[in-house]
Every structure is written in C-alpha cells, then in structure tokens.
Amino acid sequence: MKTNKTTKIIYWVSTGIIFLFEGLMPALTSHTELAVEGVRHLGYPDYFRVMLTVFKVVGALALVLPFVRGRFKEWAYAGFGITMLSAFVSHGVVDGFHGQTFFPLFIFGILVVSYLTYHKLSKLRYANYLKQEQHKTASALQV
Image 1 (cartoon, rainbow, N blue to C red):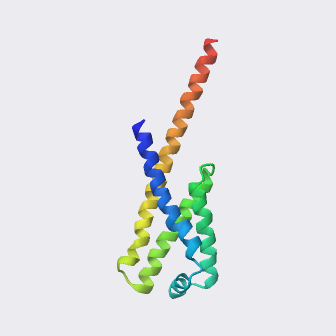
Image 2: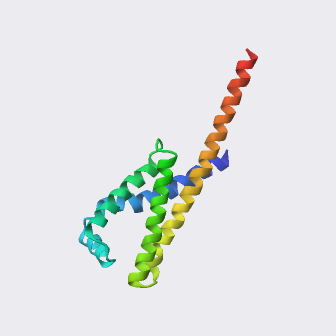
Image 3: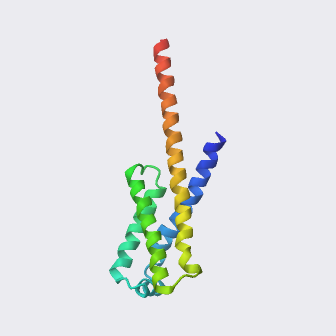
C-alpha cells in the first residue's frame, strides 16, 4: 500500500512540473516579446510558436485530467518527448552546448518519471480491478 501512495506522489509531482513548464507557462508567456524572439532566434516561423503553444496546453491538460486515459495520454507523452528532444537539438545547433541547451533534457527526465509512474499506477489499478472481480465472483458463488 505504501508503494501505491509513494507512486501516486511521485506521479503527481512529476506530472505537475510538466504541466507547469509545458502547459501553464507557454499559455501565459508565449505572446511575450521574449518568447516571440526566442522562437524566431531558433529559425522557426511565428505560426509554429502559436501551434506549439496550443499543442502544449492540450497535451498538458491530457496529462493532468484523470478521466483522460490510454492512447490520449500516450500521445501527449510522445508529443512532449519529441518536443523536449527537438528543443535540445535546436538550442544545440543554434546556440552551441551550454547549460540552457541541456534544460530540455532535464524536463525530459521528469517527463520519463511521470510516464513510468503513470504506467505503474495503471498496472496497480488493473490489479485492484481484478481482485474486485474475483471477490464478486467468489461472493456470487457462495450465494
């Protein structure tokens, strides 16, 4: 039981960090001059910044809303993974390798923790479901 609670805490903390960095911050700051210039500096057109912001917000919501499950969450995780790796490459190619270049990999690591704990919780949820079904079946047979 403690493992389940610890796993839930790790999942929600890591997923919360992803939500803040990849959903809330872009939603609030993508229109600022700093963000506009940052995307332009990397060589991307302005429409890409808008599109990326929309996809990040939708993906972040998919990660934190508990009723979103299965393939939708998988696609959100995949999208964020591609985004993080692409950000690392883009910054490395344009600006060279320094501390800021590696920050997307740090966020990618947190994303991996969220992904792994999501699957661990899914397995625990499924195991609990099977136990309940077995208990129902045993109770029905006793009647």
